[in-house]
Length: 339
Image 1: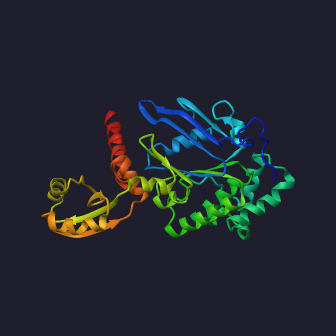
Image 2: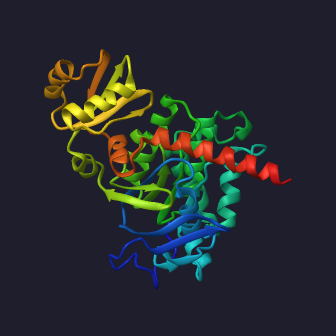
Image 3: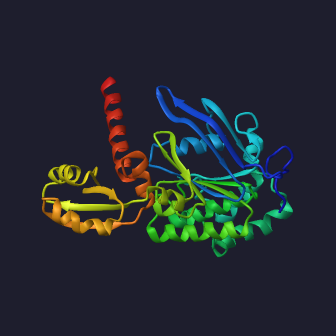
């Protein structure tokens, strides 16, 4: 199936598929996005990694023309998201966090309705429908009502729908949120397969560390700002230290002793005293000999993306999500108090 015309876009001349400069989005006094700059190359799988409330979904809404930026510019497939909305929409596919399928229709009816909305030529609909449903393993269920599908099957159908009109860019907003680990792994099998078979760029948001490992490059976003951007391996290499977590009889005394005896800064993260040191395995004997606080358990791990997040933000992504939830509850309480 032919794609939308490329005239006037950066697609055909090797330019970036996505260009963002100085992007800002405010909701009243809340600044959800605070001056983001990034480019995404053709064929990349680009990930936005961060906790809920970090600005990921707001950014993707702007890129997909579903929200207006307060300041800055964004171009997708060579088109301005503010002034050329229709052209942007013809060139993108979008899979939302929450399902937007019509559950009272069959899988095939959902896709045919989408094809009509996007003006897919009638002669191309049948072959393309088979192609995308085969790709996500749902061809045999094309006649089934969506209401009979599991959550994972619905997500796969939404990915097929997003691909039906052969977009240049597929946006996946938290594509596996709420799914069990086995289904999440299955979804990524299908995503990797579509990358193999389709000439497409993928831009996804996630707060799952293992999911971000599938990306060619990752932008770590926190409080509306990109704090790091590189390949997963380069980001992990930038940390350069192992993470050590210990369970002790007195966490406060252990943190003070680590600072006093070893010059190591530590804090409690996810219920354990956590710190980073070069050569973690070699450090452990010194730790037991010199800490002066009973150690109940110890673990050492090589740098992970969670360590990268903690290195740049001072907290793990789980801690960030917990504090974000507390902030939301406090805001809700203040709102109720004004009523």
